[in-house]
Image 1 (spheres, helix red, strand yellow):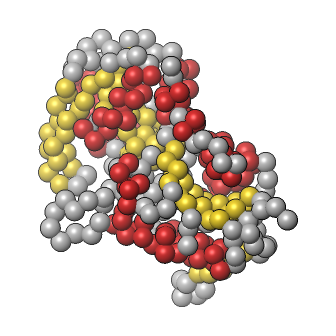
Image 2 (cartoon, helix red, strand yellow; image 1 turned 90 degrees about the vertical axis):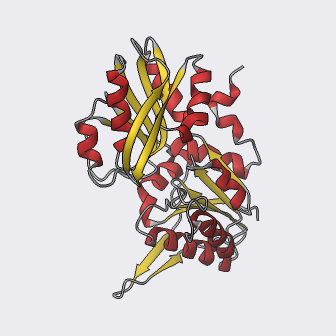
Image 3 (tube, rainbow, N blue to C red; image 1 turned 30 degrees about the vertical axis):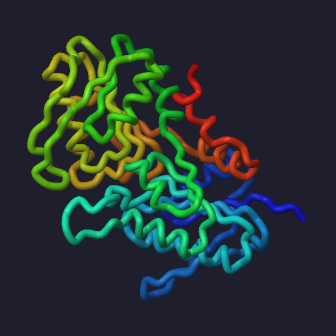
Length: 314
């Protein structure tokens, strides 16, 4: 009997896993996560997965139960003799802790990588890691999907005149440069200085945005402080409009209020993390089709990089 693809989901990403499975052309696998009165839980596969290619969809945003749930799903699949286990992590949590930037702190992204490997994952599929070098911390193959495959067609449909791209901080420069290169457009950088986490002390714009329509691109929108501050400064510098594209909508604290009261025309995000509530300025673009194609290509040993629009332009 030939091995088949089976897609399962944890509680955190059920909405997205259903889209992925539908785009793939099959139903989600039968997985039940039993919960006990003391808060303990236990994933149980209600169908055979022996020898199969098993794809487990679970974003690891807060709370930490989401990560633990994924690890237990991997362990259960390994003990059920799954042939090949891929952890599909739309949002890879704790990725901002990717280095020792001060004394006596953890490198959490490496810890998560070790846990995934120890649990029994054979492969990781994720989207827009906060720091791409985290792939080097994971000792199994990583399929790193790029949200530009979704954002670029959206931007093209807007048909924006006098477009210029902006990086909301120095760390986003490479990501923004690739998209700007695709559109053969210029880019600027918003250089920020922080007082502490989630609080900006000062920001300067490197480049000229006068009379231009600005598109900000980033991987994470947490409190939205950086994006809103960037939008205000860019408008002060003469930008005609400012809109933002962010892959992962964490949107914590006063993020929704900040966005509603900002100079942003719109904030376009992916559905890697579900929105807590709706907003007139926030647009959500689906990732289910991209993940389903990546899963099929993985199973059929086809290229993943072929899915990245900006890398295929001649």
